[in-house]
Image (cartoon, rainbow, N blue to C red; front, side, top):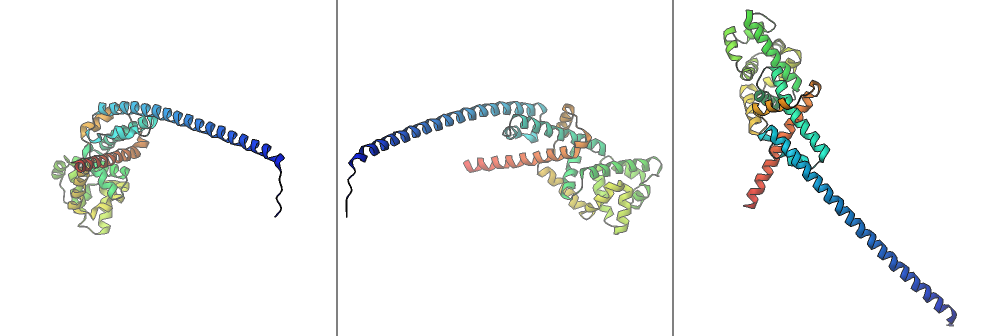
Length: 283
C-alpha cells in the first residue's frame, strides 16, 4: 500500500478542530445558562401563582363561613384550586343553587328539606325538577279547592282514593307524607285508572312523570327519602334560608343551579369519606 504524506495540511486541520471544539463548548455553556434562567423564571412564576391561589382560597373560605353551611365544610379549599375567577364563580353558583332550593320549595308548597329529599327521589327515577315542583304545586292547589266546597279539578280523584275533606285537611299539614300515601294508593288501580288519577291530581307534566314512582310503593319511596339524608344531600332549612337572603336566582337558571348544589353536596361527601379513610390509615 502506498502512503501519501501531506504535512502541509496537518496544522490547518488541527487549528480548525480546535476552533470547532471551542465553539461547541461556548454553545453548551450558553445553552446551560439559558436553561438555568428559564428554570429560575418558571419557579418564580409558580411561587407567585401559589401565593395568589392561597390568597384566593382564604377569601373563598371566608365567603363560605359567612353563610354558615355545615354540610359544605371543606369545599372552599377544593374550589380554590381552580383559580381566583373560577373559584369565585363556583362559590356564587353554589350559593345560587342553595337559594333556588328554597325558591322551588316555596313554589311547590313544601319545606326546603322535604323538597331536597324529593329532588333525590326524582333524580333516581328520571323525573325533572320542574315536573316535581309542578306536581306538588298542583296537588296542593287541587286539595285546597276540594277542601273549600268539595269540588274542583281533583275532587273526583281524591274521593276515588278514599279521602274526605276533613281527612285531607289534616294530611295537608305534611305534603311530603301525603304524596307518599297517594302514590301508594294509586298502586291499587289499573294503568288506565292510574293515568286518569295522576293527571287529575298532579296536572299534565307532573302526572305524566310521576307514574314512574307508583311501582316503588310507599316503603320504597320512604327508603329513597331516607337515603337522601344518609348521603348528606339535605341541607337544613336555616342554611337554605341564609343563602336566599344573600343572592337572587333567575328562574330560568333554577334547575341547573339546584343540580350544581346537589353535585357539590356529593363532592363534599366524597371528600369527607376520603379524609376519614386517610385518618384511619394513619392510625
